[in-house]
Amino acid sequence: MIFRQLFETDTSTYTYLLGCERTRRAVLIDPVDTQVGKYEDLLRQLDLRLVYTLETHVHADHVTAAGLLRERLQSRSVVHRDAGARCADLLVTDGVPLQVGDLEFEVRHTPGHTAGCVSYVMSDRVFTGDALFIAGCGRTDFQQGDAGLLYDSIHRRLFTLPPDTLVFPGHDYHGNTVSTIGREMARNPRVGGGRSQEEFIALMSELELDYPKDIDRALPANQACGLRPAAGGAPRVRCP
Image (cartoon, rainbow, N blue to C red; front, side, top):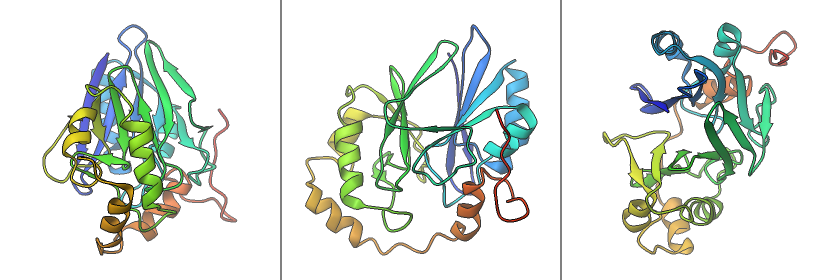
């Protein structure tokens, strides 16, 4: 497997490139629109063909590159059906398998940060988006956020994975790159160490976080796969 962890500094967003060495087919998880040129260069350098962009959710802090990459490289966008992005080529649900050459992913619905959050599970790793961070988790005070639901998603859908499963989050603000399920279960200060659901809900309600500075731009753009809505307000959709 070809694997690259890419970092967008303005929003501290991780994007992941995974490629099949046999077929040269590849996916990008949570691509950012300002990085499209870098993705294209990297794909050429590695002799890979992008077939899917996988979104962990509809983001509020950056604009996805899914629509631009679809136009330029004919990739197909993947989003959960509850995310509110009907522009996607594939609207997936919990348990859906995705295969790209020899790469196998399971879509695991992990709502709570938003209603349409998913994690992408592989045999040895999981891409958790904004559900579970390294020593943290996503906020729950907007976009259908629900602290109790996020707690359940993490404990029932992620902490049930093998403890040595690698955790690759959607963001990190402290220079961390990877953790494990076992480490987060034991040490995560928000959801680990035996913290109860009631304690977690109280903690999240007391955070008093600032209004997301880019949500008014990013949210409608991401509901249109990162492209401007066409005349009449409908997003542009390419038929696969």
